[in-house]
Image (cartoon, rainbow, N blue to C red):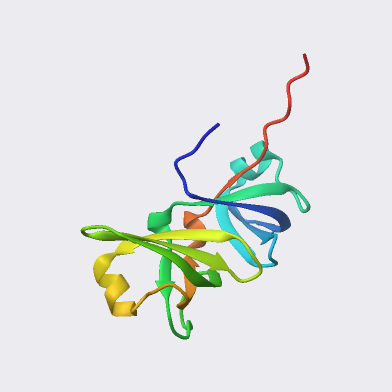
Amino acid sequence: MSLSIRNQLPATVIAVTPGEAMATVQSRLAGGQIVTAAVTLGAVEELGIVEGSPVTALAKATEVALATGEVSGLSIRNRLPGTVDRLALGAAMATVVITLEGGGELTAAITQEAVQDLELAEGTRVTALIKSTEVSLATMEPTQPR
């Protein structure tokens, strides 16, 4: 399956915390960063997500916010530090590619105004912010016997 979602981050599940209808799933990226996803219990069961499961954390670029200063007092669970690697400026929107600390890339789609307000340029240190409810999880489908 091919997806239009730019942010496809391979990870390993380190914790599953079930609730009544939803669960939080914490996964460790290759660079050591932790990503939290809030998904339905049904999805956890159907995908067979347990501690140690390999998953891919998915987040649309439009769901990634950026901060250039101290981040505190927010309910957003996913705070991934990195450095702006590339900027693609359009008429109204910009695509910002961030190299995450420890490795990996993340793309944010933000307004041109935000790029200017944050004074973003290649090499700018940023923190990517993604709500856990905006992170989806994918697993490899089991291979069908022939």
